Length: 321
Ligand SMILES: Nc1ncnc2c1ncn2[C@@H]1O[C@H](COP(=O)(O)OP(=O)(O)OP(=O)(O)O)[C@@H](O)[C@H]1O
Ligand SMILES: O=P(O)(O)O[C@H]1[C@H](OP(=O)(O)O)[C@@H](OP(=O)(O)O)[C@@H](O)[C@@H](O)[C@@H]1OP(=O)(O)O
Ligand SMILES: [Mg+2]
Ligand SMILES: [Mg+2]
Image (cartoon, rainbow, N blue to C red; front, side, top):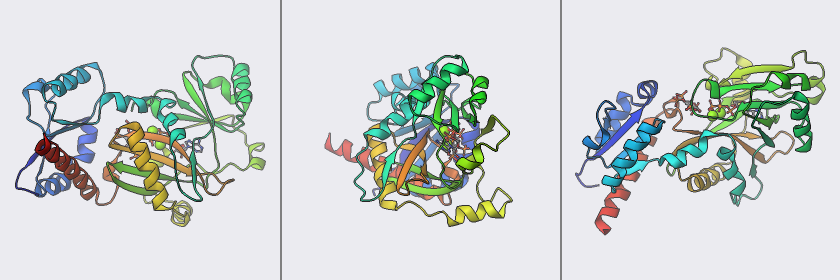
């Protein structure tokens, strides 16, 4: 790479700045010719820069307006990622639709999503039950907020064990088949062509014979997988995670690359589970924009490699224009 330095501006919520913009990342990027520059939201974006790239995780009409104006006036700046593409992940129906279009070539593994239905308006528990029956949805089901825009509410999940539990739900929601998967999920972090898969704790299986014996109708929870094996002082959970067999990396990479192309996104992660009944069947249950990369060991190398890909591509485009 030449001596040229690249300016990468960023806009992130302050919590995300604390977790993601660590000194180790700033220094590693800097050594490789990438300067990470905070964008000041108190000043018009158009007056800042120049930037080779802007990466961001911020929503709202004001930011959209500023970014669009900047992009019009600076067409060579790489925007990671387009707001329209990010917004596909902001509801739990459009988020997963794309998974059904993937053409995975693996010999033994298959990919899909759990059965799910969208409940737009609050209705009688009776008709929710009818909707479930029509789609072949059985208990237990997960009720997930339709909107997935990063607010605490959007992470508030309910595991509905019995028909009586449906009465307490607030629309708009997605009712999703709860699939037994051995209590471990696979989180796949994607930064452009760089892909890393990690194991995280999940909800425990609910064997059919146990369902009838449970007292609760509904159990609420939030962001369970954010607890890693180390966080939880529970040897059996750590052992479960340790023993879980990773999906083949070729398959994971194929799914990640195809999702990246279909979603037109560079920075995201997806949660995948292995269906206990059909051993090589994997289901994508969640896709998140700009997730917590810093939870991965040595995340600064992966992110810097990604920044360098963007910088090189930009330099090549400039040379060819
Ligand atoms: N269909 C499913 N079957 C079984 N377990 C599931 C299913 N969907 C979600 N889960 C469990 O519930 C957890 C939360 O669900 P989900 O990932 O959709 O929520 P989220 O709030 O968007 O999570 P994140 O913090 O990753 O954004 C998952 O990590 C997994 O443990
Ligand atoms: O910050 P964290 O490390 O917890 O990252 C989480 C991130 O929160 P933040 O973007 O506010 O930081 C979440 O974003 P929103 O849906 O709330 O927008 C979502 O992407 C989670 O999946 C991430 O957890 P991970 O999947 O990586 O475990
Ligand atoms: Mg998730
Ligand atoms: Mg999510």
